[in-house]
Image (cartoon, rainbow, N blue to C red):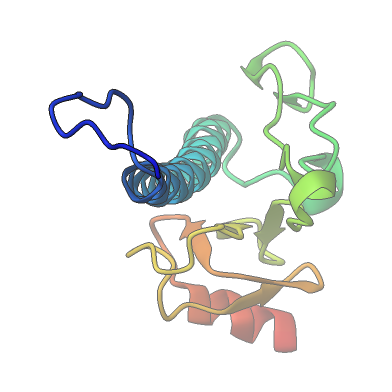
Length: 168
């Protein structure tokens, strides 16, 4: 017969207690990782918006000096290797053109720059990762062979006018 000493105190945790703690830690890990991923996506989207905003300002400065926006062929925002400068080359409006940095890893389309045939209106477009972003929701812009949800246009136009220009 085995004698059990009821006065002896047991130290340590029971299996149930350990499983409860492991379960809670697992839930907290899943929540924190998903929040981190969402924050990373929002950060990359903020970078995209900032890229287009900076490029838009450079284009407006170019227009103020030249009277037209640069032709699409002269602006390389796909590789981001060029710069935006005056036709004579004596003034630089933007030293390094922005580009989509996550094209390969996240399969994001390149930024898109379109200008109308008169050189008086432009549009810049990017795809955001967080499609529920207030600047992205409900927008589908089809330019440069891709579909985008975020865009900025010159102050004298709206996106629908750029669509019309592309159709004619």
